[in-house]
Amino acid sequence: MDLELDGLTVTASGRRLIADIDAHVRSGQLVGLVGPNGSGKSSTLRCVFRTLTPNRGTVRLGGEDVAGMSLRDSARMIAALTQESQPEFDFTAAEVVTMGRAPHKSTFARHDDEDRRIRARALSEVGCEHLAERDFRTLSGGERQRVLIARALAQQPQVLVLDEPTNHLDIRHQLDVLALVHRLGLTTVTALHDLNMAASWCDRVHVLDRGRIVAAGPPREVLTPEIVREVFGVRAHVVDHPGTGAPQLLFEPSRPAA
Amino acid sequence: MSAPTKAPETEVDSSPVEGSPSEHGRLLLTLAVALVVLAASVIGGVALGPTSIAPGKALSLLHEALRGGVVSAEDAGTYAIVWNIRLPRVLLAAVVGAGLSTVGVAVQAMVRNALADPFVLGISSGASVGASAVALFGFLGALGLYALSTAAFLGALGATLLVYLIARSGGGLAPLRLVLTGTALSYGFSAITTLMVFRAPNGNAAQSTLFWLLGSLGGVTWSSLPVATVVVALGIGYLLLSARRLNALSMGDETATTLGVAPERLRRELFVVTAAVTGVVVAVSGAVGFVGLMLPHLVRLVTGSDHRRVLLLAPPAGAIFLVWVDVLARTLAAPEELPLGVITAAIGVPCFLLLMSRRGYSFGGR
Image (cartoon, rainbow over all chains, first blue to last red):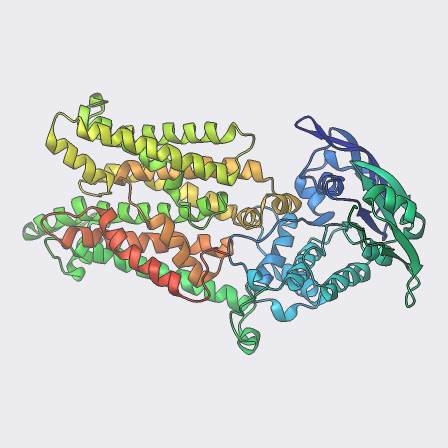
C-alpha cells in the first residue's frame, strides 16, 4: 500500500518544525529520511504514526487520509518503532509482542489461538523465539529492537515506520536490524543517522534540512558530495562499495581552525 | 550494556508461554485459590475478635441469617455480634482492600511510576481535610452519621479536581506533572489538617480524627457497604476491560498511540475512576496507607506485569490482605483498636524491603 505525505507542515509553540514535506513511498519500498539533528525527521514520522498532528498537509495511506481514521484503525495499518525508552514494568518479550494485537481486539475480545499464532510467527520471523519469556528490559539493545519489530509485525501492518532503529546499537546489530527490515519487504519509512546505512539499504532517500526536504531520490543521486557538504557541513567523497556496489561516503576529517 | 539474565535458557524453554492454554489454566487456578482463601478469610475475620467465636458456629449463624432461619435465645448475643458488627466490617475490609490494591495498579500505570499509590494524587489528604473539619468543628452536622464520610468524599473530590486542573494547565496530563502536583498539594492539605487538629476546641475529637486519618473500620454498619461495594466493583470492572490499554500505556505515550490507544483520553478516564474509587474507600475507612503501593507489586511477583493478569488477582489479594489487617487491628491490643495504617506499615515495610533485596524484581527501577 502506498504511503503519501503531502505538504506536511507542523508548527509548535511558534517554531516551524517541518514545512511542506512531500514524500511518496511506493508499496514495498524502503525509504530513508536523513538529515542533521533537528532537521525534522522525527517530526515527519510522528505525523505518520499520529503522535503529532500536522497544521497543514495530509498523510494518505492507499489514497485515504489517515486524519479521518480512528487511532485504532490506523494502528492496524501503520506500525511504528518510536524512540521511547523502556517500559516501567517488567513485561516479558512475549507480552510486548502481544501488545501488537491491541488494535485488532475490541474491548471485550479475549486473546485466542489466532493471536498466539501471530505472536509466535512474529517472534520467529525476527529470530527471537528463544527470548519469549525473558524480561524485555534485560534484553540487549539489538534484541530489544528485534522484539519491537516483532510487536510491529503482530500488528499485521501495511506500513512500518522506524524512528532511528539503529540508535545505540553496535555495528553488527545495526546491520542486523536493517537487513531484517529489508527482508520483511514491508512498505517502510525510516529515519537514519548513518548515511552509509541509508545508501546501502534504502530504495530512496529524502534529505531533510531545517524542516524541509532538500533532495529526494535513489541514494546515488541524492547522497552526493555537494548535498552532504551543503546540509551536514562535511566534505565527503563517494566511492562504490567493493562488495555490494552501493555508493558509500568517505568523510574528510575536519581540521581544527588555525 | 549489562543485561543480567533472569533465568537460565533451559528453564525458559520448559516454562509455558504466556497466553498458552496451560498458562491460562494456571491463572484461573490461582484466581480460584485466591477466592477460596478470601472466603475462608471472611469467615476467619468474623470468628476472630475480642470475643472469639468458633468458625463453625460463625458459619452456621451466617447460614441461618442468609436463609432467614431462627437462632436460639442463647445464641442471640453471638448472632448480633456476627451479623450486625463483624460481618459488615469484614466485608467492608474486603471491599476496601480490593479497591485500594486495584486502584494502585491503575495509578502506577497511569503515571507510569512503580512507586505511585492511590494517594499520590492528593486524594487521601484532601479527604482528611474534609473529615477533620467534620470531626473537629462539626461541619455538615445536619447529615448526622454520614457527615464524616460525606465530608471525606467531598474533600477527596475537591482535592482531585484541584490536582487535575493544575496538572492539566501545562497542556495534557503528563505523568510526572501529575505526580508532582499531587505530592505538592498533599503537603498543603496535610498542613491544613494538622492546623485544624491543633486548633481543635476539644482534645478527644482531635485524637479520634488522628485515628481516622490512619484508617479504621470501627463502627462500620451495613449501611456503609452498598455505595462502596458498587463503586469499587464498577471501578474494577472498568479497569479489567481496560487492561490491554493499560499495557500499551505502560510502554509510553507515543507507543500507546501507535498501538491505537489515545493516552490522554485513557489517562483522563483513569483519573476519574481512581478518584471515585479512592474517594469512596477513604470515606468509609480513612486513609489506609501502603495497600495500594505494596499489593500491586506482590501480585506482579506472582502474575508478571501483564495487566490482564495483574488486575484479575489484585482485587482478591487486596481483599484478603485487608481482612487480616483488620483482624489484627481488632485483636492485637483488644479491647483497644489499632489504626489499620499502623498494621499495614508494620507488615508492609518489611515485606517491601524483602522484595527490594530479591534479585530479579526491579520495582520498575532501571
